Image (cartoon, rainbow, N blue to C red; front, side, top):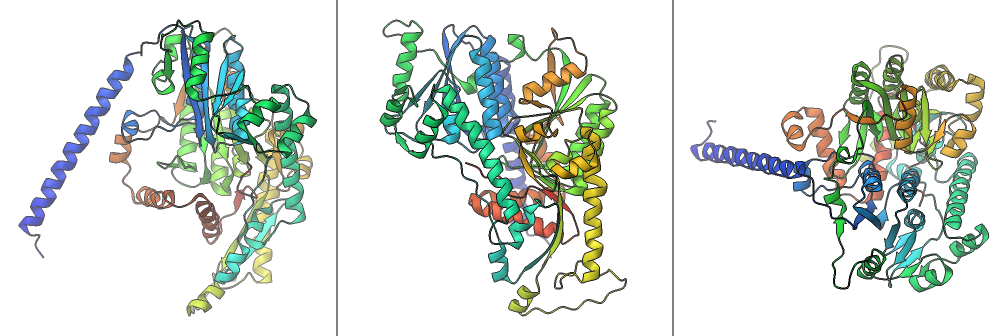
Length: 596
């Protein structure tokens, strides 16, 4: 049927309007970029206001157009950089840190504490301001010189809790049977599907993990506030505390509103009565380039960010900051950095609970090839476990925070058997097979004894033939030793260092220093960090990413982004089941890390 004239006109007008919109967006972006090229005027005796809140992804591209559309997410790398700049900027005399609710993990929280301590070494103070705080927010605040809590605010420093989800009850109701195989006593990721509660092995390492995290947390805040560990444990057991009670116990330094803290800073900095505090917003200060303060200059070191679940294909990024690691994207970035002669070393920042064993191995191989050309250093963020550890294990050095979640060296696989669901829906099916094992992944049938034996052989080879030997080679240990500390067991960074899985404590800055040393760059010389792959702008994504897989991924992310957090967690596990239907083995953390 021919298209009507009216419809043609509508399409033409719509195309023109879309074109004009895109031109306007590009024009605004150019104007914003031009303004950003002009350094903001920072007055002497200024106070820098920084905010810690939200998920704090390791890295987020600073794109003017994304800002225009309201995407102003603070990244950890940007936050740490502001501390580094302010440390050497004589115009900044104090930092006031506004600490809101954070979903960042304990590894990132330690990295923020390190950045605060580094800034304070200059002799300049940091004031923390909270309207409300749980253990993690308070943990960050205790690294500051003074802590202020809003008068109606409360400290919910009640201790740590680990939330482990189980879906066996839901699967039973749906008529889905999880036919699973695990390799490693503690590789309890399968329990998410096969049980309704924790096994003894799961409970054992979870208690060990929580003990290590909690003991370090209590010791750190007790030392910062001049309390004994026993006193701090008592305060935690008696929490929550009102602002007045927290002040009485010495957990904070003052009860005040934000403007009252600013008045105190005016007096501290010698302002005259009536003078307005020279307060610099963090977003404005971000436009002060590191180079203008003598930072980020020198030999090139590549920094590659690997964030999210690991799978085949392209990496993905959502508007909500949720990311995934695609083996194609990451291995190409590592290859490009390895072949770039101007790059002297590579640092890979890993924040991943794992994923596909095949995709993890492809990335591992890329690291192995690059390592033959130049040093490769891993910086572990909140989590670098299972597949996340797989892509890290053969680096020259591994740097982690004491609270980083790591290890989980183990494998699991299986398939969801949906016969009960089919029966419930009135669906029937028949298979006609050619080949003894052609029915290995029949959706409506459990593994036969012969099929299970064949599949277990494959899983065993992935663990004993690939994972364990490669860890042993990368960490210069025997396979027998690695097997003894592996078995899917999850460790903190501190526990991992004791067992040879980690080399040093520290964050991304420390990893860069280690890479600089391995590349034999003189200590008195600086380095310039080059991001690989260079992030695409909003406009580039709009025009260049039109393939079907990318569009489908974006559509899925759009749907997931509007769902509650717990629902997104559940769907993430169901996606693992979907991948298993194709026979993929998984290197995943035994639980969704939710320790708060």
